[in-house]
Image 1 (cartoon, rainbow, N blue to C red):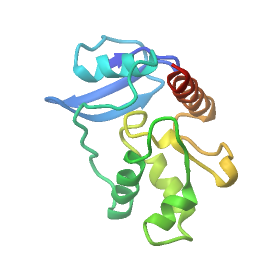
Image 2: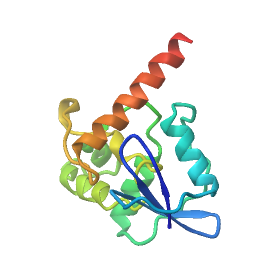
Image 3: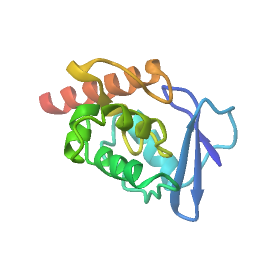
Image 4: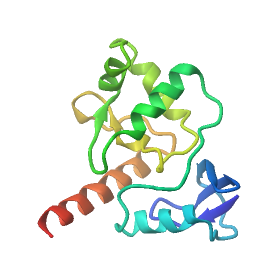
Amino acid sequence: MFVVDSLIGPLGVSVVEDTVVGVRFGVRPGPAGTHPAAQELAAYFAGELTEFAVPVEMPGGSEFERAVWAEIAKIPYGEMITYGAIATALGDPGAARAVGTACNHNPVPVIVPCHRVVGAGGKMVGFGGGLDRKRKLLELEARVALTRSWG
């Protein structure tokens, strides 16, 4: 595991060969990475990258969780979707809470953007890294998206 400093604190990034298999919040500062994931995360936090290209593998997870993670991966940069909308897209409109649980189990947050999933009416609820981190990620993306639309 290597550590990437970011505006939401240090992130621990686990890789197997060239593939990212984990991102963890709140790790102790440690060795910085030279892996392409470290470069892409640094560019993301600098507002220079809006789509990750590093290979990702989502280890574990139930069939439902993997389906949720696949839906989350489709959310465009700077946009948000509700837990209920993901549940509906998966054919189970009553599964919003289960979607929230699956988001919390996302092994590769930030790269697979579970922070873009919000409660009904855009309400800021739930995030494995804490609501402050979620808010900062959404604010970063909104600021970058606005700047690019005016640029």
